[in-house]
Image (cartoon, rainbow, N blue to C red; front, top):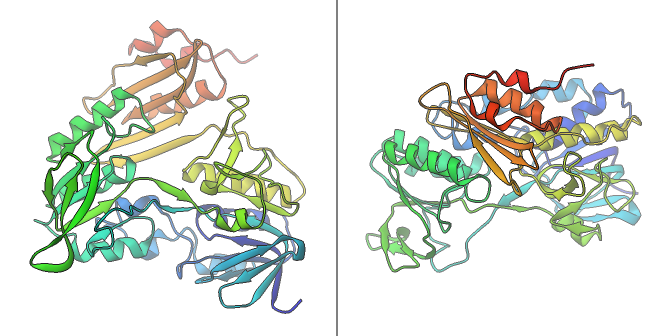
Amino acid sequence: MSGQFADVVVVGASHGGSEVVIRLRQGGFAGSIALLGAEPHLPYHRPPLSKAFLAGQTTVEQLHLRSAEAYVKANIARHPSTLVEAIEPSAHALRLHSGERFGYGKLVLATGGRPRRLTIPGSDLQGLHYMRSIADVEALRPEFVPGARLVIVGGGYIGLEVAAVAVRHGLDVEIVEFAPRVLARVAGPELSAFYEAAHRAAGVRLRLSTGVEGFEAASERPGHVGAVRCADGTILPAGLVLVAVGLVPNIELAQAAGLMMGNGVVVDALCQTSEPDILAIGDCTEHPLPFLAGVRVRLESVPNAVEQARVAASVLNGAPKPYAAVPWFWSDQYNLKLQSVGLSQGHDRVILRPARSPEGFVAFYLKDGRMIAADCVNSIQEFNLAKRLVTERVIVDTAALADPEINLKTLMPAVA
């Protein structure tokens, strides 16, 4: 075959892609490895983009997951700014945008996702931004100045994190959210109310239960956004707009190659797809959750991508270790550090435990007496113990859970 070849080719050079190639080497893999990424950068941390990097507290170099030397030392061939146009499973090859073909022995898809874009009137105006990459933040920064009027469409984690940075930076900030509360897709009403209060106290205006119909150009700046038109007819002046309405998994390559699809690329507990010699990891996958029997999910989180990368590497190294992780997430807003574990969907009871600090929050979610999830703000001790309780599917004493005088360690089952 003409073109390049590697025994293992990884498509996607973010958290999952970087982790799998390094883990392969650490596990003793001696074959050739290639890491293909669409961006020009070394693999980098994405969570700080909407926080420290946007605030100018972190440089591009500080975002890097590993140095360039680390990949060289591990004999991993990096191919930045490389776009894959198609997978040819029968030929064990990729077709690149450059026209070249890249052969593989085994293929790992770590293609992640992209921001969901709006296609309403005015969505092509300048001054309308999304956030997923270094380039996105660098495009936003020139207009991210004190006094600017920023409207954020979407009250999820990204929207709230950017709002926290923006209001501290001196911008005038308003969030427009279609749902009746922020974080509606990922959190319970109690946590939503906690964050709504925190943002309002910081000066962020929240417009909930409000859809967006379009964006209007500024009369003094043709072609640039000047206002957001809400579904109820309200016009919100805006010199800058951030759209943060979710993630679309990058599944097109896998879909066109005939891989089984669900809410993402379907994989088993070993990250194997329906196509022999192709594995998939991270935000683009739908996979089983061992701690919730019969449940399959697509998770958008760094810890999940890293865990699946380790699973994929174990499979390729011939010592498979099935996925066994419990999902967990985090978010930093103001001086509030949220740590969540498990999935609260389907809970039948919520226990609020008084936090040990005025700016803390602790909520436990139960189903049939077992803890299935927890949300903890500025409460790392409670989070660490909740992680164990969720993982071990412990039936808990609800009175003890609600009593801050009782140490959660006493709820852990005795070790035989």
